[in-house]
Length: 172
Image (cartoon, rainbow, N blue to C red; front, side):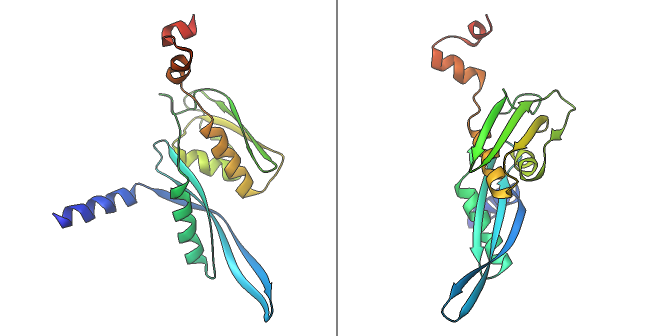
């Protein structure tokens, strides 16, 4: 019985993918001089509609990445995907000074996005989308802006329910 549980938990671990966006060496000035540490920005996703961005700091790179993965799993969001593996409607997101604009795309388009936004979209499971980073080129803020944009998405069913009408009446 215990053996089954461990294999199941291992199975859950394997379907999560993690990608490191950036590793920075940061320093803190203390009495004895400069204390060096590393900051890792990690995107965690299962390619089936769940994604999160995490930041980890540690004195070594491996420790920082592990902390980043743990932080990313704490901040997971659910992304509503269409049948064409796209997003339901155009959306914008903000993260610090970074702005991200996203639009749904036809099947076969692929992920047209740059840098951190591309990584977030791929790990969320979005296959057809157009995205543009505006404002900042900071990878952390762009990743957070992409997550903000994906978090603001709503399905047609959710909108219809909020308005108290059927989905068919939504199109009329």
